[in-house]
Image (cartoon, rainbow, N blue to C red; front, side):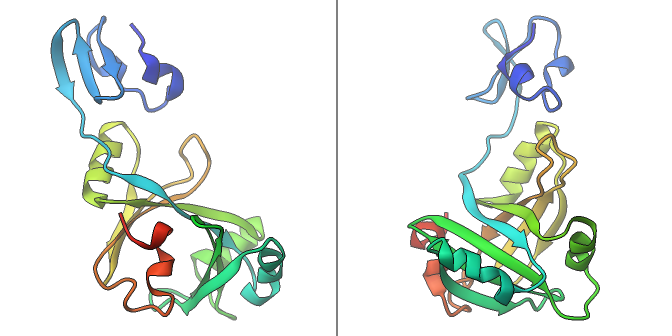
Length: 195
């Protein structure tokens, strides 16, 4: 018997792992067979869209469009972990866009992306309250989670673009000190505070 998740997420549905007659109750993330719980799947922690990342050759050349759209630039920083610079723009209360550009003359994931695709959507960052719990919940649903890394003030992992949406998703959990080490401070968080 197919359940609702089979229809919505056929490539991720795990119903075939259970006997005939088993359905997935998606709100509870529990497999049920009649009144009996067959297996329990971890719940996804709080999650929200943090920002959309756009790869560009030059932040200076690209940001004019964002200003014309009414965005306000709140931060720009050269990454100490790679050969790129990122800048954050806000539009309204909770909308965030990020431009990421490679350092001139560098060779990195970003230069490869731009050579292959040109400027455009690079990733969607989802802020999660607990990255470990999010990864466990996603993996238990058959979703591939890769490239987990921990930095001084955040932890991240990715859902590769081989997923059914074709988009690269970054999962990000903020840690104490993230805002305090950047000039934009709390403005970097959606609604001014992390999950």
